[in-house]
Length: 350
Image (cartoon, rainbow, N blue to C red; front, side):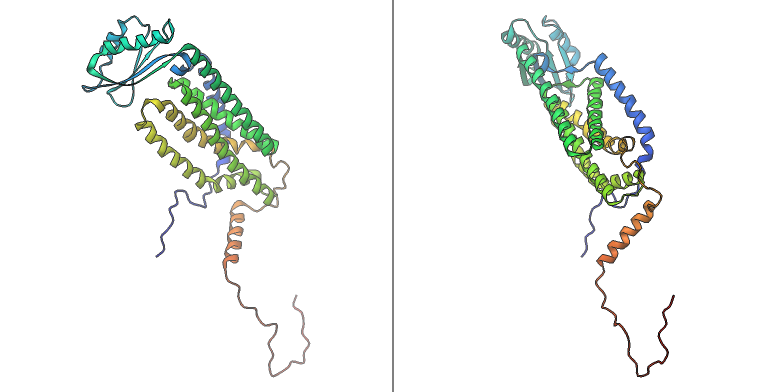
């Protein structure tokens, strides 16, 4: 019994991705400028890891949490601007206490005051206290690690590919990073150590997708030296489309489970990953990384007139594969002898 294989994306897709480059490039430029403006004017919502303070996660015992009542109870403590944020279930609340003068001892006392003010109506599930010195070091080390990873990726790309491919992959990575930071600035999700991990993971996924597509493009360039570059890029992207879709679907399913059931501790990580890997990463690999090679001069001066059309090219490849798969037929005899011989000499047909 033959069981058909599951195919999310057909093998013979023929989407013309390159024709959208005149739309995708201006759209990406506008979005990148907007992301940078958001970063400089709106800023990032630095978490407790980077600004210091106390983070308390609570859960209401009697139904949905009453944020107004909690704000009134904590606001009268004189601890500064205490932020209360509901996340996940209606019963879950995150309390952020600002940095207190007096070091870690003052932070512990502030957390105890909040516990006393809220009483026994809530469960205290998690408490994190980060001092000002530790938060400054974490921010500095996180930024240094991110910059070092980006620099190492750029050096790898420069030695891995020709300069056009290396530059295209660099542009794609920076594009993903800029749009993701703009998303974090727009939504004001916590920017903490898990966000740094998410940015590094996004760079890795984006680089992996770009390298897979670029390797296929280089293979096609060596094999078919006269095919028009736009057609060659389309065939290369279509041939890797199934792999890209399956990879991103499986990653999306895992991230959605973490996003809805993972709790606040990894909320920033999963939200950033969903945007950066699933949305931006897929878009960049197909509509930015591949088409930019046209503008960087890849395939410039190729003899395009003698190259068969993509449909004819695919038909020729399919016929060659089918011919190779057939068993060898027995060889025909060189000639047939009969009882009569012809006196006429053989004449060659023209």
